[in-house]
Length: 280
Ligand SMILES: NC(=O)c1ccc[n+]([C@@H]2O[C@H](COP(=O)([O-])OP(=O)(O)OC[C@H]3O[C@@H](n4cnc5c(N)ncnc54)[C@H](OP(=O)(O)O)[C@@H]3O)[C@@H](O)[C@H]2O)c1
Image 1 (cartoon, rainbow, N blue to C red):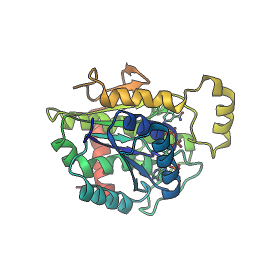
Image 2 (image 1 turned 90 degrees about the vertical axis):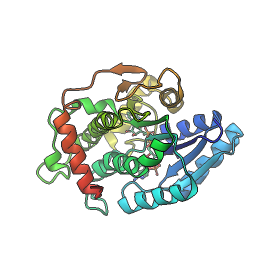
Image 3 (image 1 turned 90 degrees about the horizontal axis):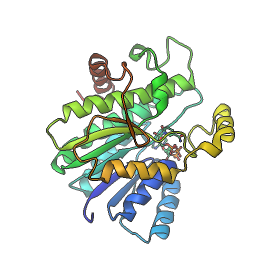
């Protein structure tokens, strides 16, 4: 796999860190994308020490800032001329309504628009590197969304709920994946989405209810290394060659909810995302 370039976002902890580690073990060149340089440096050094591999770089991107995403994409292009694997993995579960510097609710901005903007900024490079693969990490909680609220992504018309904000953003990960796969038909670039299921990471640990759930269910939780093994299967295995536009619960391919596969809603989401990221 020497010479093959991968990006893993949110690579300093949890599923992302383990995915970066396991890709490095397979001799891919891994770009670990993090928002905090110090935390990123620690993770990078740890992976290098544990694997004995040196083909890893650290790059900085705060997905709460569209300027930062543009800066990262520009720097990446200056250093590299191909991108074989993109793992959009970073994610937040905000405990309260926070607007980003772009004026957008943070779960929607970071979890969805972050995947959307980065992917679109690098898509031409991904296409020329084909066969190439994109993996979007979603969550099974997306299935809890019964009504899509693209008219109120900022929670101006309803009371903020961390669960709604998170699960809606994860629904958008699934919808974006299905729509992008259709747009990439015949391109030899595949895009899939998977949920690692309940995994012991830092996600949501600022929320009391999530800390309690973690405490009660920790024996049933997966470890980040188990989740990463599945992510690695999706982005490297021969079996996944040509498979695109699918949603997986861990290793199992599942049908998506009706809302997620509604093409009209997918188009609405795409148009709104383009407008908010000024990609149109
Ligand atoms: N853990 C679970 O049970 C579970 C279940 C289903 C789905 N997932 C999904 O799995 C993915 C990985 O999460 P995890 O469980 O591994 O949690 P985690 O340990 O909290 O990792 C999340 C990563 O995202 C990064 N991140 C957050 N906001 C960012 C921003 N604005 N810019 C750049 N990076 C940012 C974090 O950086 P910092 O360390 O700097 O905050 C961290 O590296 C997420 O997409 C999550 O939705 C997790």
